Length: 202
Picture 1 (cartoon, rainbow, N blue to C red):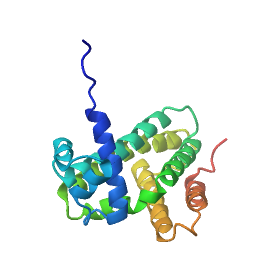
Picture 2 (picture 1 turned 90 degrees about the vertical axis):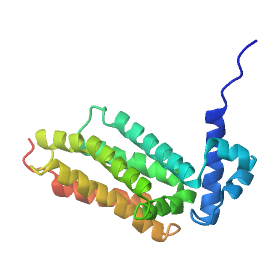
Picture 3 (picture 1 turned 180 degrees about the vertical axis):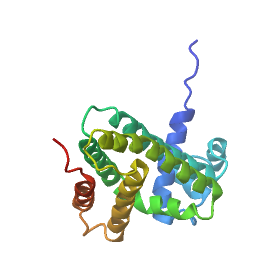
Picture 4 (picture 1 turned 45 degrees about the vertical axis):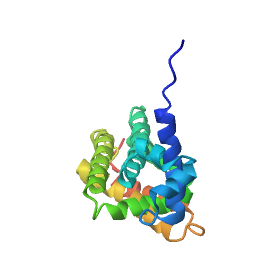
């Protein structure tokens, strides 16, 4: 007799997808566990078997999103290309991912707001930022060492690059129907890279 398949991961994914829909509809603070159970088609007891609080669901959503992004960036940095091309291709990756989750962007900003009053969320976002920087800084440093970029501090450049990304996302969130996110962030990054490009190459 073959063992029963483990459906726990499938069930957790089902719950998190339901939670995303509920959070986008009701907001993080007003959404209830009852709402998530109903959306997932589960009893409240079954929901609590997998997640014993709304905060645990939020933490899992954050972990899934950032781990997926970090995994993509880890593959991206392994490419053999110029630092400028790598940074520009990273923007393409980010744009595609964010446009694919456009209906849930309000939740991303609620997560960010929670970081100021929820220590667990705050620590998670800080740790994710440092993971991101740990991947970007070597790419920038490579560009500096190869003479592509001016002799600047790689950490400062990576932080500024990240600020452009975050700032573009924020501007886009103000008016998603009228702001062309792809054009905004692509032009902003291009202007930034022009500014740090070394003119001593060749």
